[in-house]
Image (cartoon, rainbow over all chains, first blue to last red; front, side, top):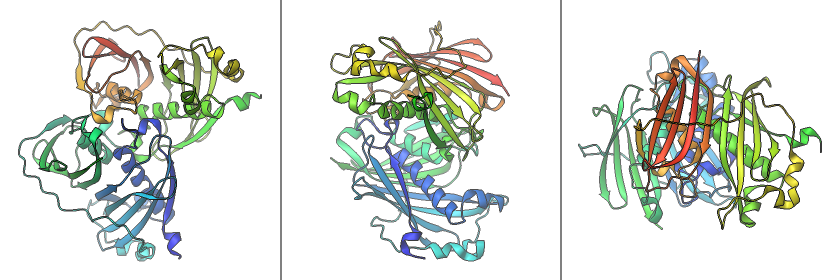
Amino acid sequence: MSELGKIGTYQFVAEPFHVDYTGHLTIGVLGNHLLNVAGFHSHDRGFGIDRLNKEHYTWVLSRLALEMYDLPMQYESFTIETWVENVYRLFTDRNFAVLNKEGKAIAYARSVWAMIDTETRKPVDLMAIHDGDIAGYICDKDCPIDKPSRIKVNSKEPVAILPVKYSDMDINGHVNSIRYIEHILDLFPVDAFKEKRVRRFEMAYVAETMATDTMAYYMDKVDDDNFDIEVKKNQTDVVCRSKVIFDRE
Amino acid sequence: MSELGKIGTYQFVAEPFHVDYTGHLTIGVLGNHLLNVAGFHSHDRGFGIDRLNKEHYTWVLSRLALEMYDLPMQYESFTIETWVENVYRLFTDRNFAVLNKEGKAIAYARSVWAMIDTETRKPVDLMAIHDGDIAGYICDKDCPIDKPSRIKVNSKEPVAILPVKYSDMDINGHVNSIRYIEHILDLFPVDAFKEKRVRRFEMAYVAETMATDTMAYYMDKVDDDNFDIEVKKNQTDVVCRSKVIFDRE
């Protein structure tokens, strides 16, 4: 298979309700597009959720790290490329590049996925699925951003405690992965995004939040432009951690 | 022009993060699609925001009423049709039909739009724009749902007071039209959507909320399945009103 055949390429337009007050595509919407293209790409290669579900397997997103030098403005078209960088026994690394309408890379992302058995909820050996076919899709295209880091939050006082609402939830009855991104950005004052932009955003997904839980957000300020966030359900169990690094304009 | 040429037809798929915990497309996402296809349809006929903005005009959404008998499930494809029903001097009625993958109409919507001068913020005579060309797109396709109603809310005690957050805002620095829909549905207990579905949803947009405002939500319970909601900025000025009518499953 050619390297090109291993890379999935998908076209988008930044829709009016998908941009923020600076006119740029929101990170939540970009995250949604990344997870969708991951789905399209794996579906077309025999590893889509629909086929896996029939076999009692499903993909679980473990980590996501984005680095953004620019983002599309309202009505601008852009392209997302995705490819598999590595396949380990229990994890696979999937990378992304976002290209602007001139074809210039304006953002990159790294993601780490596990496959679980939907009956036992236990991780599955990726090399045992479809005779290890997935390793055939490994592609050595460059993704020039750091891997997801280890995030540790010390703060014991939540900066926000949010009840889980209807619009937070996904088809599995959990808070959806994209909503955490929006809630985390909403911890910052609205004005924060006027003078600075998010350059790097990381998410580490640890556990699920249900409708009856609350989401408590804890934040460590590493410096003026670098924040570590932890979300605990019911102020006890970690559900996800995040790192937000800003760049001055 | 044939009647068919007057109707715009657009294809969609219900994406994983765009469905609720029952697996159905959310009303917020559907509303977003409706406003997008309104934009595509008017753009292709010379009345798009991009051209209007150059002429110092823009479209303003005044009312939206949806009636839903069913909604697409996760990964299902669906089609949205849109057409202009009427053009008055200061308003135009644009309707929508949502068709499921078998081509059956599963939802309809009505919307009312005004055009304003972006410099004076005053309404514009639609018949004076491009020699009244817009009237040539009037189409008599049926839209078998009631027109938007007059909504009146008596309650004086807010059921929620929400600060405006970064993710609420649109490119104009106002709370975006779709976010109100999500916030209104989030006024109901998460469990409410288990036994019943929203059959009809109305929005009347009156004014804009800015980042420095708060959004106070007032709710009249007309009966167990019928609710009128009013949003006031800073608990004083009405920004929008809504009606939510549920159907038991």
